[in-house]
Image (cartoon, rainbow, N blue to C red; front, side, top):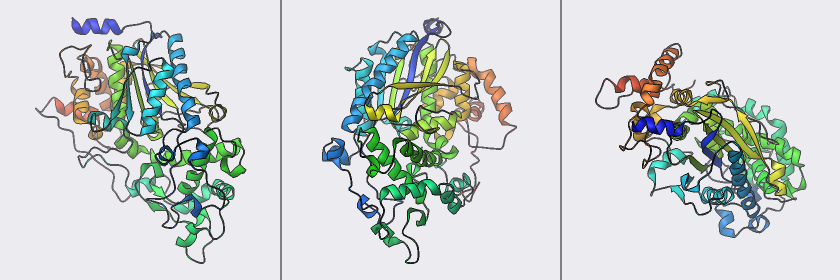
Length: 488
């Protein structure tokens, strides 16, 4: 009876909104300095690449400490509250009666993520709400919100060099050639001298140019897994975008128009596409997507925490994009950009999930207007805008890699076991799937399993694990079948 009551509590008109899982990138930050892994030994500063003046904390309206630790810029802070206010307005129009006591907010442990979460809550009208930070004090949220946490089981792995090269054919010269125009335009705007210090690392008979540097596999997702010409060029383009989004009029050394800057920002989007490839998305994004699915199911069934907001990085959003095979064009941005303040929102409407991408255009961020645009997406494996929650959970179960989930979250998804007796209240929100999960989804799991048998072998999925879970006392996944580290 308790389960039935909880289900009835979550029932609503087919299109009436009853909750949301809001996955957001942080707001506009200061740029990281060049340097570290993947950069040339003598290219570890802006001055090593350019003869133009370099912008520091004062130009961004920041303290030296805030600038050096990539906190939100002064202008960037003003853009976040409109994101929260816009969400509240849109959700109210969709029928959601927002109650701040039912809003749960988490942030990755970067200061800019926490700042963004707090300012967003102010815009939402919930300024007194607490932000839980995924760190040592809340370790169960670290796999969900980190963009580089790999389950330490020796099975879950990010892309090997061979797999990374296999995503573009392996010819790094062809990769440079494909983006040659943009790389050269970045170099011109950079005012890179012919004897730049960064070029000390190049042979004497090689031109001092961004395109002349070799590619080096560094396994860092936010580098696109390779240091080299495309990464260096996109770094400067992204840094100039941060200048523009921070309201500065002298962005990119006065060398680019806003439209040209947006086009060159496409280099960054390309790098992030490599960063969030199939292998990385499954290794680094499965826990977040599983959390979204568990949360959606809980909200449908009346869980008191009906708005769950998570603040992290563009990589986190892009992992979800790849896992769900989503596409979007946010107003003013290149296709698949995950801009500052952008959010992938999973709206719970009646017994279904509606997926939305929300973002502010570059022009709106630069001007400070902060207008939010919305794009409604369709998950291809679901096929409709309002994806029934049971179908949504099945799609997620097929998309994630069970080897890359925290054990408790994985077990909850497989077995449908609650960690507490009360199915509606007092539960740790990411550790339970309600008691009806397997009975509602079991038949569809069999259908998906049959579909999988037609495909080439891949890493272990929840469906494989669920078949074995009934046969043994402990959880036993079928053996993974990872691709060879020598290539794809």
